[in-house]
Image 1 (cartoon, rainbow, N blue to C red):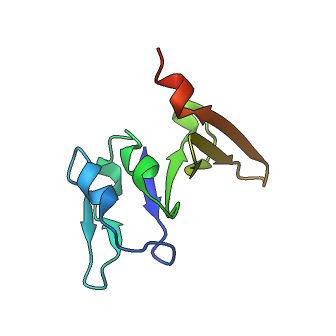
Image 2 (image 1 turned 90 degrees about the vertical axis):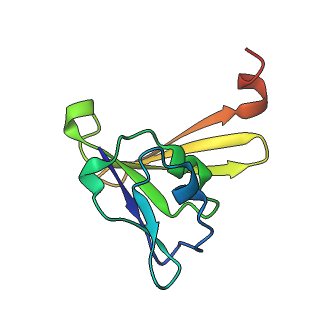
Length: 104
């Protein structure tokens, strides 16, 4: 499991680096985030949820049924959307109301 960071989208806020439990995400000389050893990624998705500009994708490999799909999140108010982009172009969106889910 691994993440991919889109440096064109990255704004260099460092939030991903701050939440990575493995300290795998670094900031380069231009202020952009990168992961030096993607194979070491634990797949916790903390960085994906923290990225305010949706610059981080998580690779869903065949070993977990993803068949090469990529996942990122988008947030609007209390709604956290998980966007799954399949290799053949289809997109699945799963909305989670964070306010509602915190009641349990």
